[in-house]
Length: 279
Image (cartoon, rainbow, N blue to C red; front, side):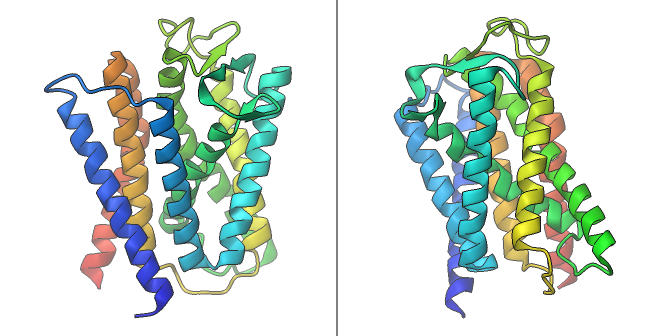
């Protein structure tokens, strides 16, 4: 077995283990109260997931693309967050508290890390479900498919923020200056413009990645292990969000997560099961 394939399979097993742990914690929270993760533990978890994404990308797509995507994601996500929390553009008027630790331009580095952790598995799932990895027939077709895939990636990623934003506001990690109509019982609520901003920002990041690192590719479809890794990590993020929402008592937001992230995860596992059966 090639070294890269071994590395990809190791990443897959770790992602599956992470999924099992988050599912168990979520189930256990219905039996007895579970402790809230401190910021230090969240930091370790996100950094470990970031490393997992980079290693998996390096093993399956090559290190140039893996490191390139990390750089594009970090720079663009920091930029969008910077103009958001400093000028009230893009997402709305909000500010981070000191709770999340080291910040650059008032943007906590932990927030920048979290963007790639959710965008990367979303990219993999969308590309597999839409067949966006196949070589295009023309340049125009490439742009059309890249645009559709990037928009789908943005929607799939934003589903995660629908759950995590109220969790973070409740825990005092950031605050909205004027609140909003989404879950107004959570410190005044979250503005819906925030989620439109997420769609736009992730669309730009996804399109930039596809333009810089996948245009001109002419290769076979990715192995099933890439989809299994992505499905496991994305579903782990779903269970993690549901767990956090259950801890703070927001059943409505849990339903939102189930009906937004849930179908994406179900489609990914269904495609995986179909491809496995076909082989």
